[in-house]
Image (cartoon, rainbow over the protein chains, first blue to last red):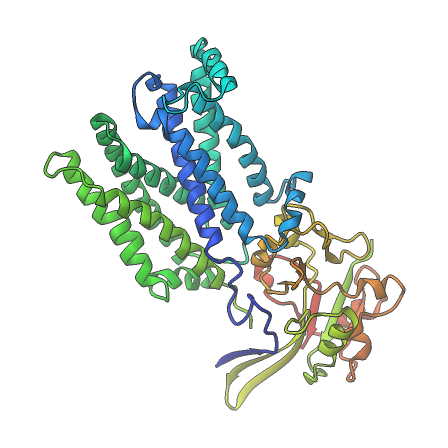
Length: 312
Length: 179
């Protein structure tokens, strides 16, 4: 028998750690989604597709700005000492993933803004003279457009990785303490971003392209999940207990049904049939993928907080 | 630099919670929160049962993950004794340090910043013991410099069998329990 009793009953800490509510999973999801948006729209810009009327070129950078701001607002809501948030930008702590994230986000905004200026949609043109002027200047230099595409792709990848590293750097929570988390979250972000384009675009070529890309991301994500789980199961007892929280424990139902089942496998089958012309493209599959991506963050953040080292 | 550690004799500790009350009084710890607490760890099968009573708090680790993950530098290693402190006016309340602590020793103070044991640094710098150590009725708690081979804590750790909490987390905690 092993039994541990304690007189401590600190709020949010006991009986189980629950310091991060809905705000952090939403922030991580939106961060990953924007990372995917940046990689996709950066790729379109790099390849010169901004001359065509693709959603990824014209609107995705704008949507990214809105989503990222929403994510940062969620992060702000989570802070307990809100008035001191400016302290993030008075220092750079090299060992802190959160400090890296704060500065990365500061670089992401101008990169996104530059991408919006590559091709201003008609609805936004001739509104702000400065933006139109910049857009004209950028369009006079094709090499600049390519560099903006590359910059967005690189910063998007860094942002997506950061959303995973933020958790995996916290060694006290065995479920998060995996070197697979950064690539899992990056791939999930890419998958959700491709699903979003698939969902909203009106262009047939772009829809097929995004569905095909999403299928590849979903297959890769399944592989990453397998590696993540195997890695955890072959690690210490604390890591094994951590992964069992989502495999067989209190988060198993959400994980298997909504993250793996309706979040990856079912939409993958639907989209494979759609790209092979067996059925028509349906908005249901991308909605499932996006919902699965969001719930993945909830499951990992919530279960990770419960996971802990053996205390006896 | 001194290396301040606490040594707690589990053979003497009776779990009376005087240390808990002393800490709350000394540091004005708000109602419903604790910087230190009592843990009872029972192991084994009758008749071979072992019960260890421990007074626990922040372990003031030598390899502190809470300091490394802090995005603002609010969590820091104090220049006296390697004590881990939180600068309340720099803390943004992101809670990363709470998530990074394997001992769950930190909490959010009702005013929004992260709070935890300070080893009563305000007393220690004046040459006094932390409040919990000074009130212990069984004298089961010892406080001192591990870098001084003649200190009581150094001698106790050399003479008695001891353990730290969750050593596998690699944080090199500065609280030792004599068994």
